[in-house]
Image (cartoon, rainbow, N blue to C red; front, side, top):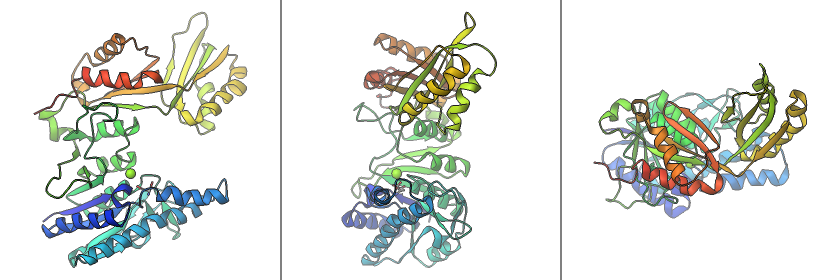
Length: 413
Ligand code: ASP
Ligand code: MG
């Protein structure tokens, strides 16, 4: 008998029919003798609808009240799922985040979990219940309702699995696992049987939207076995999904490259003719950070004639704001020649822990792009990924040729 936490996302509980389907799946696990804790999201589109209501009243609603509103989405689905389980003759009890006592800090709309009181859940499980918990929400010391940031139900699932020392945390979604890249761009993309936490973190932060980044960090830290599965597969035809695990567990079949990630949501800014002297990077990026704009890649050229060029990328939605800061504040202050920007770029990355022990990955990537005549504008690397910034029009082509060059479409034993 195992203790399993299952999390079902918005599309999996989109309507009463889908909720009944989830109930049947949960009941099958329980009938096999497992203890099951279920975490659910709001019905798909519901969180957006709820937050939209507030936006119709105020352009800058109080975050505390936004959380009061947003948390209701999940409260509906936990009740509905319990009723569906009751109809099937199963014992089930629902809990909001506050009822469990998922204790968080008070950072409304992006709270962090501090502690979970799992005693009620355990008692209910021991008396034969399925326990259904509202994802995405908690409560702070003062009793205020909080939410964990968009996509936060994944984190609730993982945190509960950690607190309960569950055997596995299963994240049910509308895809049957983590893919080598987005199958909408590369039809030959394959589901990965395994991926390491580090790779999953890179892929999530580089644009793959399968899991909330924070949930992956949490699972890595607390050593929760995490599996991504589809809730749309028929009984008897369920696949194994993708297991997210530690490098040591999969050494034998570890490929060099696990996936190609990409992100369209970036823009590039360049300051030309920057005086080459100490403190310049700080004088450029300081005001950008003060404006609360996230900087991703940074490149500074070798100086010549006493000046240099300095480029960095920001989220595309912050492009205009960043450009205005460069032109109005930074350029005159440091005496740079010109500030220019380009918001039609993309970032494409190859990710794989095998890079640590293999040479030639970067050159293979650059050769592949060169053969297609694709110009690389910026490059950055970490131990397990290489990212390049390209003109947005090359995104699909670059992802496709890299997927092929790294043999990701070949079936592995
Ligand atoms: N319902 C919340 C959202 O849409 C949380 C979640 O689904 O994970 O962000
Ligand atoms: Mg989600």
